[in-house]
Image (tube, rainbow, N blue to C red; front, side, top):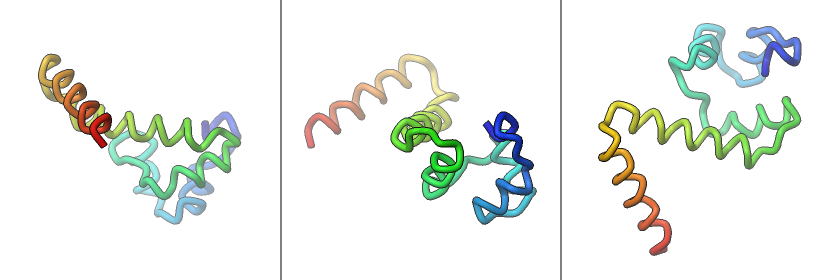
Length: 87
């Protein structure tokens, strides 16, 4: 998205109030964007904040579960759904 909008990494790092090495790690997916940065990115890129937050949350879930076997991952997701439905 950054390149599509013609922005430099330095510009995004400044907007997100982080340094260049940290921003570079975010772009390389070695470090996650912080939750409080999602609304800033949504505003900058003129995308729906809720959709971007949904992607951010899904990415976090994936990062936690990706190393587990498929059955365990799906069982954990099903259990989490039960937690939410029981609220």
